[in-house]
Length: 143
Image (tube, rainbow, N blue to C red; front, side, top):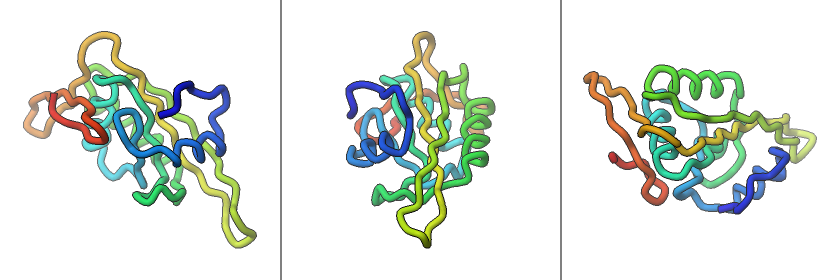
């Protein structure tokens, strides 16, 4: 994992991240399909050591791009609706230049999840209960 967070969050930084495997502090997502699922990842990263979620990336670590406004909404809504207390995070939209004249520019989102400095972050469940998660390798596990 990169030792230092760069001053500039840009396409070059995304390309550096793509050389890294998913793990304790790095997660790739094609898109956010479920607020509940991403809330679990936010909780796990925040309760462990913080980390980064890169959205718009395939399982093969290829940039596929996303609608940045839709994905920003899903992250914010997941944090608002499911995380107790809310996760401290920052969201960056990164424009990826076309690789050829036949491609359009793409966008990816980088979600920087800060480690929780206070209480554990819990996720509201469908049954009304609250569960906390932690990161174990590249997975979110029940705390």
